[in-house]
Amino acid sequence: EIVLTQSPATLSLSPGERATLSCRASQSVSSYLAWYQQKPGQAPRLLIYDASNRATGIPARFSGSGSGTDFTLTISSLEPEDFAIYYCQQRDSWPGTFGQGTKVEIK
Amino acid sequence: EVQLLESGGGLVQPGGSLRLSCAASGFSSSSHAMSWVRQAPGKGLEWVSLISGSNDGTYYADSVKGRFTISRDNSKNTLYLQVNSLRADDTAVYYCAKGRTSWYLTYFDFWGQGTLVTVSS
Image (tube, rainbow over all chains, first blue to last red; front, side, top):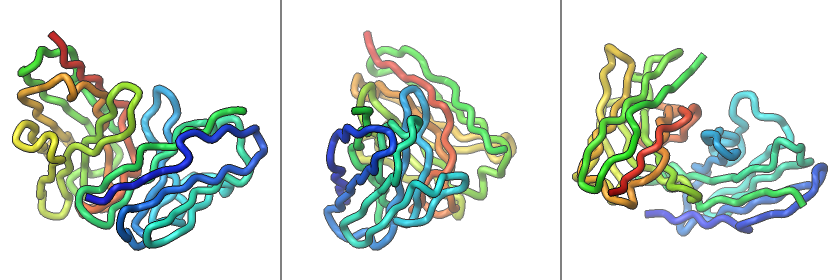
């Protein structure tokens, strides 16, 4: 099974700052990677799919990049509602594994 | 509007069983892969089981294979997860999730609010 490793585990930033989150796969997943956001007590929400495509209704400040084994989620300017946990997920091969998450917290 | 409403969770003793349900509305769940994803308290997401929309093929994580069974009733637009031989490490919020496609390799574009399963004596 493909292992996804996210870094850092925690990112402490202030509103308005840029956030850069990383997801590394144990083997190539081509561009078959998604990013989800989860807030406390809520279900995950799909943000980005196929590495760089924003899901419906997702603000333009969220962007994804990468291919192969290295992927990045960038939040260009953090809004108060963006402080949450972010997970990556691959769909290149069975099972479609998730990363362990990166928490973006208010500094 | 797409909605997924889970039910059936609760407190159960080790070795016990439950049937989780997920009532879908706003779309035809038979045309999509549908999945159960769980999250243990304070932990990350763990994919549990999936039923494809293309041929109703079923897929399971190794940790639940032989104990959990996924199914659906297209006439009721409802997904199920029969969970047997429950263990303490099955304690989690179980989310129902809609696949973006019918294929088993997919992302999940809508999620329910989850149902809590607690396994404890």
